[in-house]
Length: 243
Ligand SMILES: Cc1cc2nc3c(=O)[nH]c(=O)nc-3n(C[C@H](O)[C@H](O)[C@H](O)COP(=O)(O)OP(=O)(O)OC[C@H]3O[C@@H](n4cnc5c(N)ncnc54)[C@H](O)[C@@H]3O)c2cc1C
Image (cartoon, rainbow, N blue to C red; front, side, top):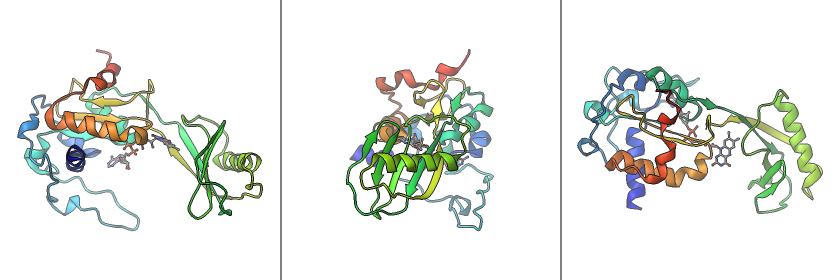
């Protein structure tokens, strides 16, 4: 539990993504975790630029002139865990990180009477019933590129629900969403420090929800103590580096 709290604290403290990386990630291979402040508690915001404000529409936060967290904290490095955006952020720094972003369609039906209280996994269909009675369903776990418009895919998925779920014969489409999965080219997580740029730590992967408890703990340990768990050995970012 203590470790998890430390993980949460370090994550909240150091997770800085986007432009600040390009602006501040000076090569600093000697980033010493022992000299890093805020190892166990999140620092207060340095200035108002760190406090997101609701906008209409929301505007991107400005990149502040000085490092978020102050000079001491920025010396500890930057963790990029930006999902599908990770590649775009680290490649300008010279880190080769090939990724795919296969789409994933989810449909939600209009509410139905209570039918089941488990997750149902079938070929080409996984579905559960939400508290309001709507069925939430998806197709493949890995994502597939397709030219078929999402509206048509959504209708087809609802038809599959009607065909396969007893009691859902009259299901109607409520709404659909398409999410993009962060999938490194070889399908495996990318977790660790690239050799060619100091002060940078990358963590991006698919099945990041399932993996979150263990990855959160292992990343926190490496960032805080400098100890890299052997489990992470195959997943370093340098496996994509040509030289
Ligand atoms: C349809 C679908 C179904 C999935 N099903 C499963 C499943 O069943 N099990 C499973 O384990 N995984 C599943 N996944 C994958 C899972 O969602 C991801 O692996 C996981 O979300 C990755 O977590 P993350 O924190 O690394 O990245 P993300 O969840 O993508 O979070 C990255 C965050 O960084 C933010 N960000 C990006 N760029 C910037 C920037 N420049 N500045 C500031 N913020 C930025 C984004 O807004 C986002 O909030 C699914 C994905 C999809 C799309």
